[in-house]
View 1 (cartoon, rainbow, N blue to C red):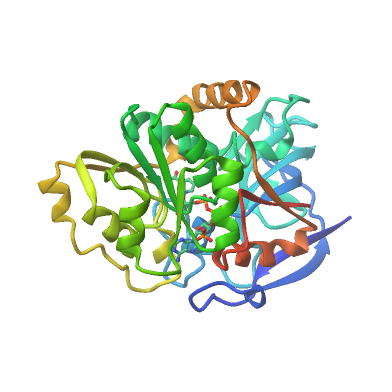
View 2 (spheres, rainbow, N blue to C red):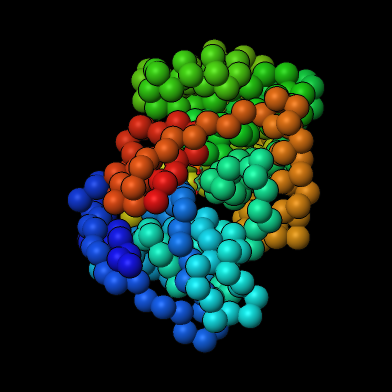
Amino acid sequence: MQNIQVLLARRPNGVPVPDDFSVRETPVVQPDTGQALIENIYISLDAGFRNWMDEDAGDEVLPAMPLGQPVMGLTVGRVIASKHPNLPLGQLVMGRLAWESFSLASDDFLVPLDDDETIPEHYHLGILGDTGMSAYFGLKDIGKPSTEDTVLISAAAGSVGYVAGQVARIMGAKRIGGFTSSEPKRQRLIQEVGYDEVINYRQGNLDEQLQAACPNGIDVYFDNVGGAILETVLSQINHGARIPFCGAVADYNSKTPSGPGNLFMLVTQCVRLEGFLTHTKLERYDEARQQLKTWMNQDALQTFVQEYQGVDQCGIAFSDLFAGNNFGKTIVKV
Ligand SMILES: NC(=O)c1ccc[n+]([C@@H]2O[C@H](COP(=O)([O-])OP(=O)(O)OC[C@H]3O[C@@H](n4cnc5c(N)ncnc54)[C@H](OP(=O)(O)O)[C@@H]3O)[C@@H](O)[C@H]2O)c1
């Protein structure tokens, strides 16, 4: 059997492009003691992994990705050979593995999943995975929208954002606004996902657009991007607002973080800004998944998936996340 792998061919210079990645075929390696061989079924493309592509990028979450090696990413797959006591043949797993058709794995970063025919495997990477649960935890634990609240969400069409928009609606928020990068995405967010108003941050005056979209100010800002957009939102934030700080995609391609410069607004408006990491909340995954599934069964929560075919497409799919070409959860079917 051959393993098709997508490698980090060079370190992206700012925004990633498909030529930063290359494809190779190599024989599949059989597992050693304590390892299992996973046949990857779907690969998740997540803007956050851009963080570990720079030379000096390693941190307490992950090491910097080595050049010439398969790109790290989340996958869902099945055990097809095993010398690991807790990973039997046929076990479905979700893990931090790599952009490749077969991965060797031990316990690290691996979560066994229940087989459930009613749930497509890729839901474990999206709506019932890290991104869907991030929307849930951010709003349930930090945002806590009330029926009088305006909720605003950045990267509204991304994998976290499109779920957060719907969860805010389910939780009863009065008005739901978002940010995105193009008119077609803006229209889809309003017509298909149910946002009340969406701002195209690449056009016009951001401050004026925000005032028009959220005339009563912002009570909950679910932030996925940080930077200049966060600064603009802070300038119009309401007293007592909450900011679940989920990510800072505006800074992932930059060597110099971009602000904001008006953090004192947190003090004068008594705002709670709190960062969180979903993968540290393993003990609450059942709660989050059960709630998200219930809302899906009630048709209150829809899934939007952008699927690419073939592991060799990972570099293109990943670059599309930064070029404004994605809508919903981006996955590659291996
Ligand atoms: N805290 C956690 O546990 C956790 C878990 C998962 C993800 N995250 C973070 O959550 C955020 C969203 O992730 P995701 O998976 O939803 O996104 P995604 O599906 O990977 O898509 C990335 C989105 O970012 C937007 N974007 C790209 N460049 C941008 C820029 N320069 N300024 C503003 N927006 C930009 C794009 O939307 P537009 O085209 O509309 O701009 C795109 O939809 C990321 O920061 C990610 O790291 C955090």
